Image (spheres, rainbow, N blue to C red):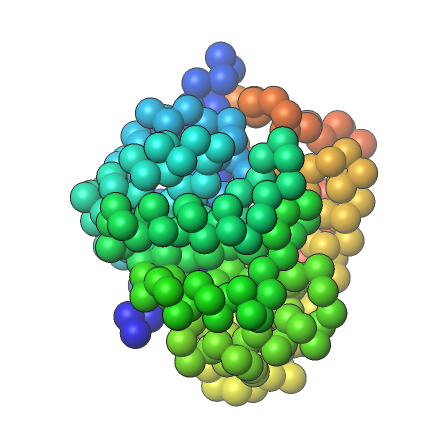
Amino acid sequence: MNKMFHGTLLPVLIYYHADESIDYKSTIRNVVYVLKYGLTWDNSCFIIGSVEGQRGALTLNERLKLMRIISKKVNRRVPIGISVQDHNVDNMLELSKTAAQIGLDFIQISPPSYYYRSSFEDFDDIMKKITNTTDIPILVHNTPWENVVDLSAKQIKILVDKYPQFVGLRWRTRRSVDDYLKVIDMYHKRLQIIDNQNMPVMTHLMGGVGYVSHFANIYPEIAVPLLDLLKQKNYVAAQQHISKYNRLWNKFRLFMWRYGTLELSVVKAALSTNGRQAESYVERLTTRYMNDKDKILLRQALTDIEANYLK
């Protein structure tokens, strides 16, 4: 199995101009930064259009243009994929075909989220359409927080048996920790499993290979050493490493969740606070902004993180 989902799965940030058109220059600047400070083919992979469902704010043509521009800049330095999730299956097929044509390494899809509650059968039908259209590898992103299908071990087995292109699982569940670990134990020899449950050490111990890290957009030099510790099976040191910044970072993220935003505006505000300012600080609806008082709290959290790691 071609290993591509190891280490940090980095959701690529998309920036906007004041008129809300895409700021490709600032978007690429952040990609170049994280590559410069330690993200490589051996410790990371990139995903486009997967920050808080950011793809929902983008048109089909914008998503097609983004994957072309970003993949050209990355130039095979890290594996790269795109979330093809969409309410229109034809758009999903167009994105999937284009991703394969221009040489992306994978696509990411999730059980569908519509006005009504979707079913596993819906997702199976979508998987069938995509795999009949292209042979690009697939990363399945389980998204139970959207009140859709929370894939079970039995359902994952059905997908594994039917679709050889299903090679990666971005894994999270609303069920018990035992159920979370059970899936990793059952399928880690068939699937490359990425932790999305904020349990990177236990996931790796059970056979997982990677973990989602929005934090790596801000401090790639802090995020990268975690994989080295995991590869060395130095799990105590790995947990200590991540706990120091997770305790501070997650506390602030959860504080911000009262606004209905968890990652996007927080990460961009942190980059701005650290001097990595884009041309403008504009988001498309329905992303919420941080106020000045919240930014003071964020700056304190970042100062504490830097004191632990960078000084």
